Image 1 (cartoon, helix red, strand yellow):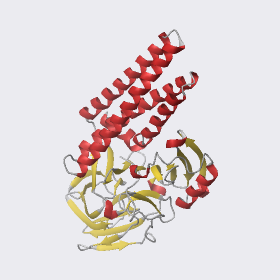
Image 2: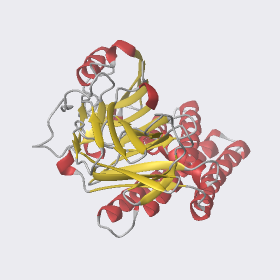
Image 3: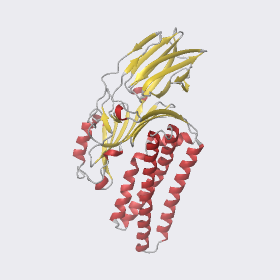
Image 4: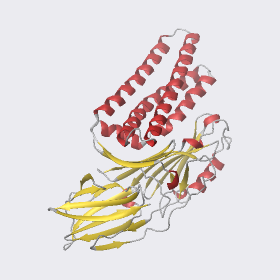
Length: 407
């Protein structure tokens, strides 16, 4: 699984040796929020990072739950995702067929009006379903796997629904139905946070394409998903803070991208030098400004709410190998366990070496007692969990352990 991390304003590595040799490098200063949310309803802030991209995250004291899981073939999730997609696709085909069969503009307007009404209600249901899953997860009513399954199903359905809304918007524009076109465009904006790279990975994993290591942190209705694709070491992350959406305020920038870009540069000063482009999404009442940047470690795509002028949603794709890291190492008997990490909920690289020759060996790895795979005589990528963490590595019937805390 992949994604881009979860949030600690920083990386604090507290090493608790159990014997053997421990070597650790510091990764630099702890990250700081670019704005404070202590006295507001806003759940997340954009945090600085040491010599790499800033990121959207909740403060540690606002996190309700934080867990990780490996997602693989999941028939229930795969069937649910396919069923939702089929239902949405059927609705789209039905609307298009009725539109094509209509003989007058009046009949076409009726199709568009009914379609907009149905799709708006469908978006409402999708958003409510996801919010309910997050709240049930926060309350302990469901576990991480159930939450991830719900996100996969909703994400697949949102993908198809967004395409139908785009068609409806074009049809409404062609008939000069401004209100319906705006509603269709607004629906697409609401689905943006449900169509990220981690959710796509969840759908693929459930279908059996490849397993995905996923880490989740929630803060009220807000959620961060981080995942690592072990096939190429890509770290994926998406973060959504629904509290910053202010539909009633309207676009504070009045469609002018220049001041919106100034705001982006305030929030993402390290990334601004790698800025690729900006575009406005949606009608004035719900408009988002989307920024993209390709920086030395990967890609950032972030969405600024034009009303609150805060970040609503963010996606990151990071080449985990290229990101700045802290090294933590412990020798236990004939084995050395070496960790290269960025911060809590960030990518974590685990290597196990022969202590004498310092060559990599194939070791089975457990993270807090849960098997997560083998190093394959090379290395194993996963996500660093928040809090006290014990990593056990076993090779040739010998086990070495390293304990640390990610805050």
